[in-house]
Image (cartoon, rainbow, N blue to C red; front, side, top):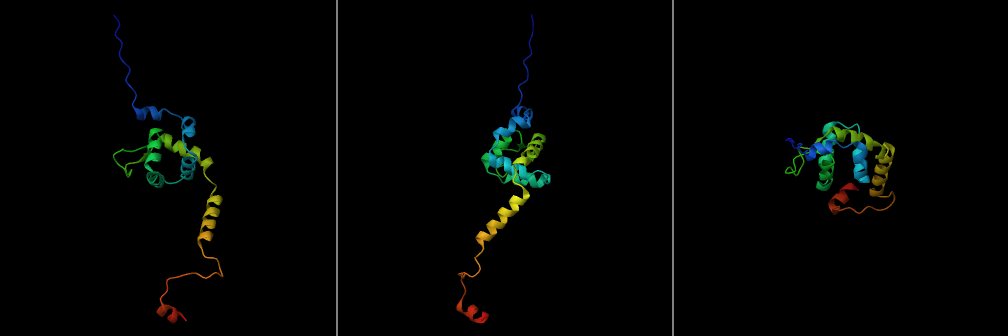
Length: 135
């Protein structure tokens, strides 16, 4: 009589760790790829904090893919840690991140659009006393 020993079931986290970068990348949205790509080269704490500020759905996606680990009861994700696979995915996503020059140019455009145009009156809430004192 042969006795077969059942193989232990792999936990979900060990299954996700068995994934490769090539398997994970297609599962990420363009936005997530760009966000992760921007984190390439960032200190671990900064990268983890940035990911912790993402929406719960994004964090759960990253957890399900094995990119990060955190306790799901920790809604603020203070326990979030980037896995080895996560660091590899972040490095691979760097190609999707906008170039630093593009980020700087977009920031300058946003500031320029938010700033008042020179020569146009700026409405301000100024009392008549402070207006008189200024003249």
